[in-house]
Image (cartoon, rainbow, N blue to C red; front, top):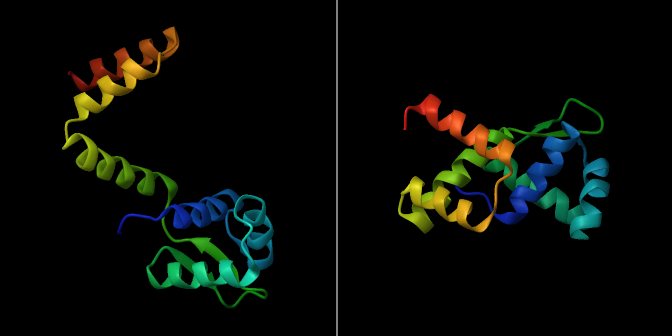
Length: 121
């Protein structure tokens, strides 16, 4: 799977959130955020089907569109890509940067410590 564009993320998020839906429902779901017309949404869905990102149940009337990839798989790919591009694969540097910029609650720190202990880092 190649990297997703921001617009592909938007469409997939709508599909994940709805669990799959007919075109009309997706248009209404996407319109507040994107302002896209029915034709624009259909164009994205068709292109994304060709890429293997979307499935179309053509036996249903109206057709039902679903994500062909799960959210966590896409998130993991995006994390790996970001880590390679921005931090040259140095996960420790990425984590350190986030921790310096975004304070953690006591509960989050405790959870992070447990995770690191489990990983034997």
